[in-house]
Amino acid sequence: MAARCRFAARFHHVHGANVRLDASRTRATRVESFANGLCFSQEPLAPGQIFLVEIEEKELGWCGHLRVGLTAHDPQSLEVVPEYSLPDLVNMGDTWVFAITRSHNRVTVDGEEAPAWSPSGDPFLLIERVWIPRDTLVGRSRPGRYSHILDDLYKMNVLPATARRSRIGVLYAPQPDGTADMHIVINGEDMGPSARRLPAARPLYAVVDVFASTKTVRVIPVEYGCSSLPADALPARHPEAHRPPPGHRWPGPAPAAEELLPTRVRHQGAAPATPRADSPTGGWDPCPRLPPRHDSVSSVVAGPPSAQVAAGQSEQ
Image (tube, rainbow, N blue to C red; front, side, top):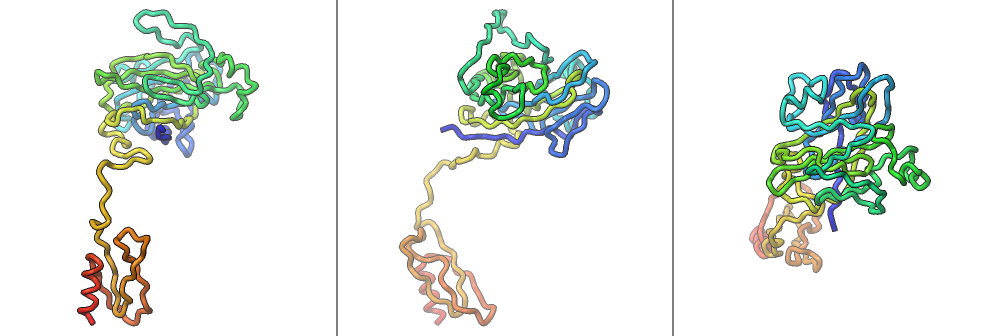
């Protein structure tokens, strides 16, 4: 069974001049103008990890919508956060940003015509080798965990990409040649590889530009199986690179009982160790019952039980 992984997703403390984050750094609001709304993920993304946000608030009077993507620039290294993701941040290089529009977000591959989308009964979205629960990815026109049962917008997936409560995510999928493809997911629908040949070996941070008519976005945590990803897919600097997944057991046989050298604390006048049938250390209780102490003399004796018994007899 695939291990269940939940990445702690929140925004980086480095952001645009007009952005205000809440205390948890999971909600970003542009408080002035229509620009300077750049936000980044707190950590570089793992391969197949989606950084998902929901549009919580809109602002009328502006032309343009949310922009998302990836960058190989560490936000901490930026002397000044650019005013715009497009074109300013992209012009710095090693950055790929996708402008979300009300429609026509699907990317055609090699000039092929994009197939018409139809509702899918599959509870998971498959991108490359990553399975993501579709229920988390789809925005709903009305709040509530089970509101989609009677929600026609959910059933037909006609919630506009730029509408309030729409959910938009970005991830990258490693390729056999060592590069990666960037995918944009809008309300549970994969828009296809919007950028190719990203440097998968470098840390890649999510970019969220709270631009123009988009005023507030909130990070949505996603939990899904990660075991289909290669073990060495994480960049060397990624915080999860050297952390084993839940339930991981390092290779190699377990040490035999005779290889475990029990350590005992002997006090003056202590009763000898007593055998126990359920003990993994050869039937000897590593914690014998001790009589009340009348002084502070104690010593540590390590070794097999036979050596400790002999040491106790020599002391007497």
